[in-house]
Length: 239
Image (cartoon, rainbow, N blue to C red):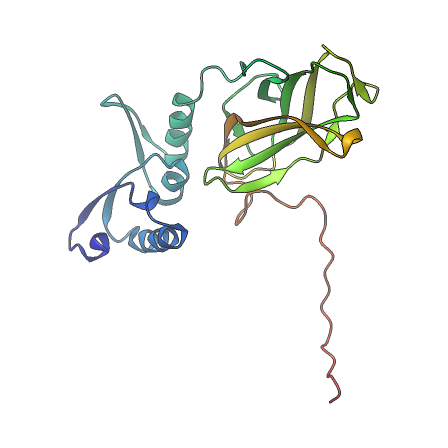
């Protein structure tokens, strides 16, 4: 409210869109959008989606030094690459997931992916006991922590329906990148479909990646199948 009432040609706004509940944040986004173009606003934030949505130019500062100035999308990509985890393969020991990573079609493991390019989500699983009908899946959340999509459970045993004790397998799910621009985290799960969907292993936030958008407008993933629709005259109901 103070930001809106301030009678100044230049506003310095520091993480104002990251506070409050969802309703308050939505109100802040609307007001911020109205101010855009009417005043000069210096917007300080770690939210790269907000940078790409509202800013005309962006500056990346690290350790008090200016690293880059220019297009918001390019600067946002530099920011997320700078803050990418250095080792995303080594996971805790024991039975279950030993590594989770994402690849592009060239076999590279980038932190930033492009909407529409071919990508694959991969995992290495080790089991300590025999498992009948093993199935694996990846689940995805956006930067706000909301669930976006979950892959269907897929067979995790090569050419058969069983993993033996001590066996290690590499799992892969390949698709055209359907995600809109933004940051996402990945959970991975392993179940036994032969034991009433018994959950055998699960790891949260196994991987974080960023998509260069914007991709689909108004959503986070496009519908892959056609949608049947119809419009017909409404019949009057006899009374």
